[in-house]
Length: 234
Image 1: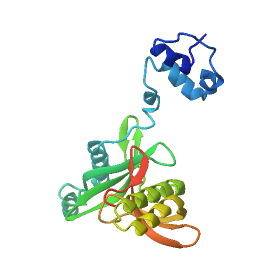
Image 2: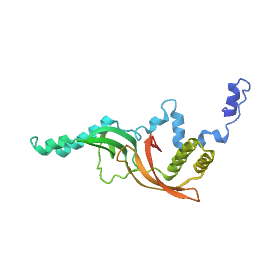
Image 3: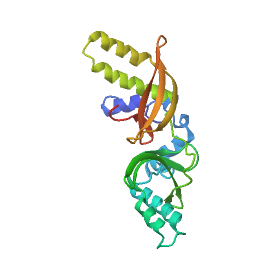
Image 4: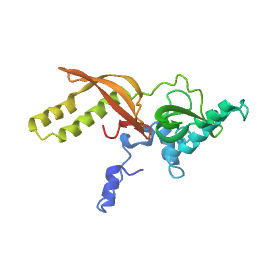
């Protein structure tokens, strides 16, 4: 016999110690198998540790080491005295920041927005890293698709942003219009996503409407702990 949540609550109040058979809603067997295993092992290991390998993210230093190995391999066949090798060393990429890291859609890889300098130029770019034998590597960077937030997530973020804007309106009529839009706007399309040229965000064109009017605007996103969020300052 197990205490139901109600009985446990009464017990904590020291008024009723009656135990009832567990209800269906609180039966352990109603949980998914994976969650049941986590619950059983919770005394030994947090559930999040079960997915530690799949959610591992590279540090800036690990990403730089992967970049250096790839660069060294690219110039390894050039003589040390070759002037082109000296020029290449001048343009060795130096990573300054690693943002918005999240698992790639395909394979055991991670996509990040890396801000790197090469010579006098510095700009964000998409960087894919893969953990191979415990070491972060840079697989083929060609044709890496720019990740795009799901349409339903963009709708949530757009409504959140409009709700914040509503609170900034001094005119009650205008504030009411913003509040209505925050509850009714529907996102129809998210397209043309790309890494911004001046900051570590992903910019997308978003088409949305409320049934009567439709429009398009650019929205900027980042990923925090794998979750899409509005970019700071937007």
